[in-house]
Image 1 (cartoon, rainbow, N blue to C red):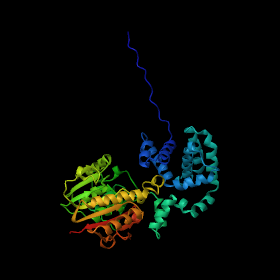
Image 2: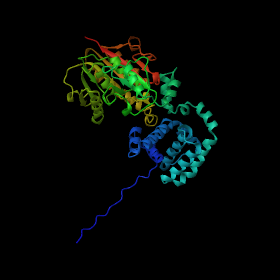
Image 3: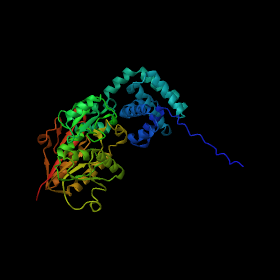
Image 4: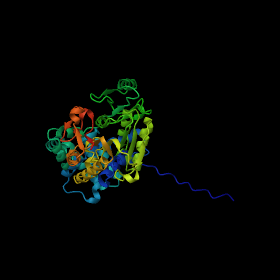
Length: 452
């Protein structure tokens, strides 16, 4: 008797449109608090590269302008949406992003956004979507006037963050916020142990990827247009790395010397770790510490590509019994967790996810890490405190009180001694404004531990 034939169940076909996938990514950020990077990875899974790029671009554009779009949506509604209809607010914001910022033809944006409501089984919202988006089209001149008059809408940042940046940068806040609305350029770091920047520029030009040199950093160059890293000559073998220009100052300021014992105290994902090793020709006794084992794996991958190695340790900085052998370090890079407001161009979800109450909590953690790292530094050694924050409470307001209360701590005058063009001197350390030579916003303070 013949065996019973196995029933074949057809695989489910994913019929989600690219717009629906973009909406899901934005919804995960706005309504679920997920990072945009993770949300886009999930939304683009299984897509062809062209469709994935489109989904990513729409999600990033919508999140970059979300505080503005949310404010406009609220102004169009007669009454607030119910909590269970929150996704409709996200959908309206995405539709407005297409109308105002994404370049989709106006009536196509209205039609496709209405169709998307049907795709997500919200046909009752079609009328509202049509009314809001058509009104936005009719009233674009009026909207533009209102946006220009309100800095929260103009620069698409929450009110608390606008005030915090204005307090920290009273003369430059508008330029910083203007820069925050623009996509970040793609900047490379040249491994100067492997070849000159001029040779790298020539190789890039020959590959059809023109770039321009940074005027103050000998290792940095910026591409005219971003490209896939696989298209970069020398990337796979470590001659080039992708790293923001402002972040590259860390290696130059700490200036590790061959043979030194160095701690990268918050190392993941490893860009600065690799740069420290490059500057010393790999001749460092370097410990890469991070409390996240998964992110520490990124450090390993980066160092493998560069051909370097380091002691990689997954532990908390202050849990020294778990990882430290008791021998003090000559130099420490302390790139502390922060609000990341200086990299808001690259991570526009910060505008939605970050809250004003996060800043005091982060500042307390930064002060804890600074005190912990200081105990590991030898007399005569140096510590570079770094953040990618634009906000004073995470920067000089952490470091200055520490220096004042620590008898053997001396702050070195970075602006004069190291000459970072365009930086702003603080009571302790320097701030690099967002957009300086295309770079992200950073803060650096270099401290020396004086001998008894």
